[in-house]
Length: 560
Image (cartoon, rainbow, N blue to C red; front, side, top):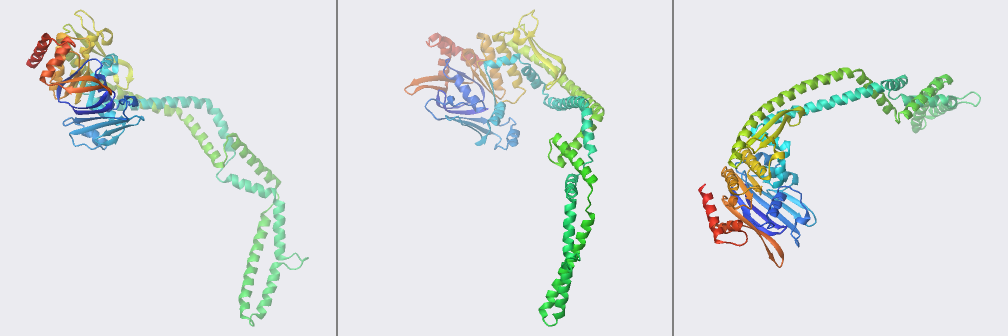
């Protein structure tokens, strides 16, 4: 529950610090005094969008901070999940906004994303404003009411899991059917492209080998000539004298002859022998290479034609390397294999989808059973509550009808139907109920579901619109019962009948001074309550009769 609220420099509020109590409280005040500003500040604290224009004129920063007592509400999981400090009882939310447009949020003094503030805020406070009456026209809201009463969270979760898998399989089957259709259209083209690549008989490294072979074949005469000339230099050709090897051999003999006379010559002699041996090996290799080099125009033509085909395919498929062409070859094979196996794959997917459909139906039917049972409970409770609120001939029905196909929320359509007349036929509630009737329906719904959820604080913003007198008193009685049920209920109201039933009464007002207009919120003492109620009864001019009526209202409320 909301324990305290601090507001600094927000709209018309310079500084406000106020404490709140458990039970039923009301806030009253003249139109324009600042009640909507107060709700706006709380909304900002709960993660609503922040704008710098919200800052009080002349100030640079506004702060909104609230302390909550969460003992007994089972919110430990939220703080553990988001790694936030929590002692099991107190929680502080703070929002800061600067005139530069920067906004910061804190949970227990830990910086937090606004989205996290909003998530926590949804579990702390429910603010029911007049525009929320429009929710009655929305099926999602009606369904959520039934689900709350049904306490079917586990069944909803189980259904959503199988529904998600069913949706995934539907999408996969649709995509597979589309791929198969396109594949059949492209099959001849793919097979032609594949055949072109397979006819090339391309393997890894083949392009580099072929390019090297082409170079050798194109320059075979030059290569053989260079090898022959080099070999002749080493061996001699008979006409030009001895070659290098023979000359080295002769030089070695000369050194050997004097090796005994000069010790250092032995090493030089050995080195010459090593050079002679190395040159002899080189000569042998040159001879073998020369024998392998052949002038082969036919082979050159075949290699050149193969490389031309390779280059043409690379250009056609807009690839640069041999590896990319091989990958394309593998892709074509995979696509054709998928086409060849598409019927089998589609049949497998259809079987999986049918099985998933059965799971969706089973989970949905289990959910429908819980909802239909809850629908009867909602009908009974709402009729009882609305009769108490002055609609004696009320008919309230919760129609649970099957959908044409499963939806993310189940197999059911939920529609609230209403009639306030004795012989009237229930119709969709948003189409037939008056403003006062909708206000009573919404209060009854809130009272009903508040017993099923552990929401600490509920704020009603003029839920009494369109009602007065005895009906207002009965609405006040319901709100006080909700407060007596261990939660905090705050009602912003203009009706003295509702204000009289409050256990705690606050008044919002504004004052003008040299600095401008400022809104204030104060808690009223017993005698101040009498005066405030008298003003609500008689307006600005306070009369003795209004004061007596105010005392009578308070006495009557206290006796209930």
